[in-house]
Length: 348
Ligand code: G3I
Image (tube, rainbow, N blue to C red; front, side):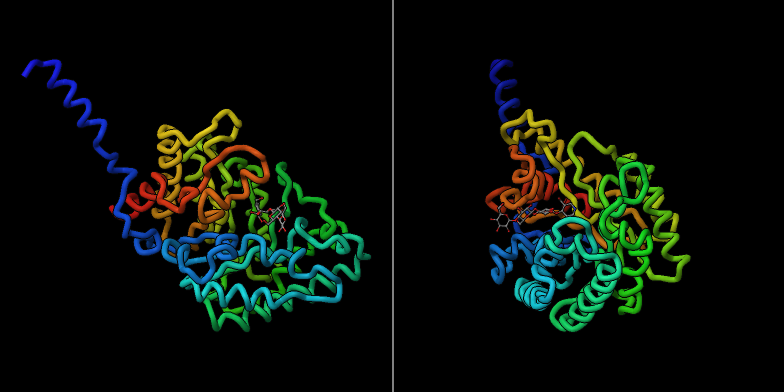
């Protein structure tokens, strides 16, 4: 056989060969392989609840929108706590074994009437809200284990100072302590988190979050861990920065929840499709995070939650009005290279 024919056959064969790193058995699922909990969010459950599609891949569901205050208290005199019961039942029907409640106290997605309340009323309402939230979670834990709660979300600015939200204006930083205090007596199997973004990218903000948590502990309230949202992209933060952030958190004695993971492939809006090169880069980033996380001591690993089920449901395209594909399953719900790379990393 002439040498050029042989070389062409070899090239064709090599290009047909599947990349072992980013392909995997269609019957193998992340929840079966991961030695820690793997989560997704509720918007998919709203679409496909009961059919157990997302519960096949993930064992934990985190509430993306349904338990936010604008939905829980649309009117001042009405608490929609039936939403917790509904969510817990649907989680069970969809074969999730764990539910993570997100968020209790946040400055965003709140009812319009709330920020106008006078400080005393706001404080009373916050305490009542936390108390009722807790009571309902406890009541409906008969359906699904409530493994964690984002008690306070995004209380910090990028420079590490406290955000001047209406909560802060009314009570100073004490609103954070009061909120955690309301949950402190819960079953210790339900972990309490402070949750924020850019913590791997911005060491100043991470230090401030850790100081805030230390202050809460010294004030005698329970806080178990830090939720690192991780809305990141294929360029940053680096794996070194992520590893350093994980280490800093566990060195201070807090659990780590990678709480809202997505990896944008089009952060600069320069792409129009999910090319193999972009998907491969995304697979490296995802697998790197799963690998680093898996190396943490077990007692600090609360789990990794991906912020959405498939690329069809991610918040990113809506919010930024651009093409993107930031999640582990594609728009058709098929495993992406990133899914297989995470699975293979854990399954070694
Ligand atoms: O429910 C309404 C629907 O009735 C209406 O037709 C539609 C029109 O746009 O909007 C729907 O509400 C949207 C809601 O998501 C539910 O899909 C809101 O417009 C939209 O703003 C809202 O976005 C959510 C965002 O928080 C708002 O802050 C995202 O889904 C949710 O993923 C995102 O999650 C946050 C975390 O809670 C905290 N960390 C950051 C993260 C990303 O922003």
